[in-house]
Length: 351
Image 1 (cartoon, one colour):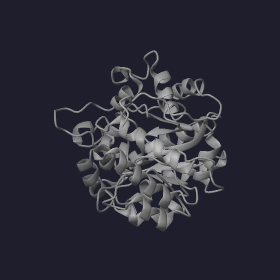
Image 2 (cartoon, helix red, strand yellow):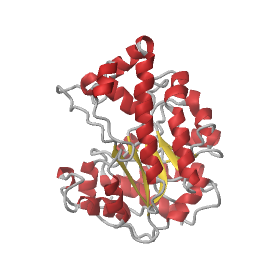
Image 3 (spheres, helix red, strand yellow):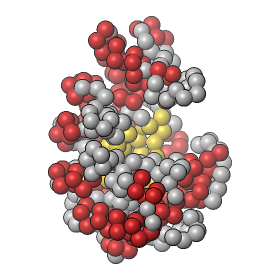
Image 4 (tube, helix red, strand yellow):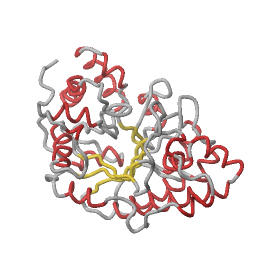
């Protein structure tokens, strides 16, 4: 593999080609790429900067971020901003971000006293305006609200707290989900009107290896209606909606197809359902995005990566309704050279 992790991939961006894959209408003129997230460490290594030490408000932050995606041959800039809902940092070392350490609501009093943002200003829209001003012709933002309904509520109430409240205080659970869903809907409704935003996206990890965290009936009551409304807002403005969700969603895939009407799904794990199998089962109704195993990318040599990439291109891009990428995200520990090998082989193989 080359020793230069910062080399640029030649590409003339054309978001319309990515749209063909998302809408499943026509075959893209080139193989699109898509990722949901890239770690700050990966971006720093790729761009030869100290991006991992920067914050969104720092000078040059968004310039580096946009150039990172453009330099790898993307037609879109994936980005999201969190709700203006303050959460405490982890209280102790070793406590996961999804644990009780960030819980702020355990009672109706907590709910009423929490400093909820207004639905007119639920996220930092200014960041999207900055990025919009940096886009060259042919590039659009794929944007959304960071964390989805389940992730926000499970953090604000704690996983254990939410579990108890579902049995002991369902009215409180209903109130918290209703508030969060309202804010998320409002954020997406405004993003959908922005010319620079070409598609909406929502990340919301709903499950683990064998099932969803909440029972399917609870998801249908508290979470899926928000997805349905986000998709409707996107479609109203002629834009598709992408859902990123980890875990085994087998019991709700039909719900995601209808009534939610999502257009594309990201995040695949071979131990749950390989993207090639998902493509066989649902590919005519939902566009799968990415799916190459992060561990395989991290551990494989160049020849193996090229063969692995071609295998997925053959299986998933035969009809043009797929985008090349990982099954989850670009991590600090992923060798940048290995990922670039995947992208270069994907484009070369489909040229």
